[in-house]
Image (cartoon, rainbow, N blue to C red; front, top):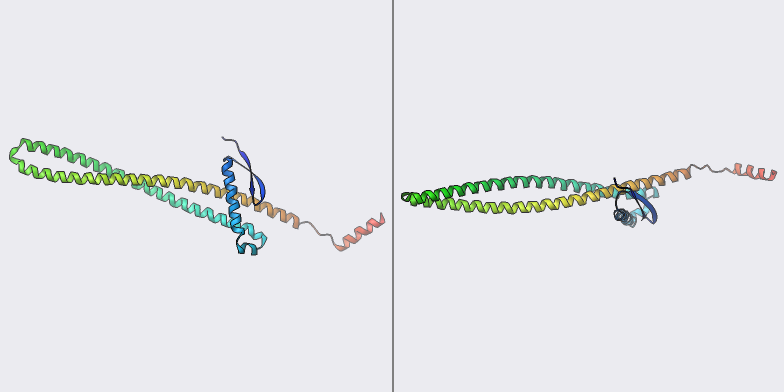
Length: 217
């Protein structure tokens, strides 16, 4: 198992140390994404008007929105991939059937050519049959070429779908990491605010007694 790696990144003007099994370039890319998202949201007029305790939630909501959109794109790409795989299988099966029919037709054509040569009395009838078989052969050959082209197109589509799937998986992973980091940052910020609010204030009477005790000393 690979060892964890630690990388210092800057998010919203603060330096954080991220640990994980990913390469440093990937972690820097995640930090860059968060900074871009924060900058994009903080520049909006409505962001400046909302309370401070809602600003982090707004940023998280936007990143969560990106996550679910990427997840939906991934699911759509996966469905397209499965459909393309099924269509490709059916096309290959159809191509095999077409090739078998062509081979059978060629065998029949060769047999009838031989019979035509052996039976001169049936030459005219055999010639007509030969022409029909030749036409069928050309038609099947044309269909085979079309099937091969469709097979090539589906293989290209399958390759693009697989590439799209890998890209969406990378974005999905990146968004999950962003969500976890922001949730941790928000929790830390909320804990800090709660600690400050919990400190009791000194009353006027307590201040007066404290001054009186000083004079006595």
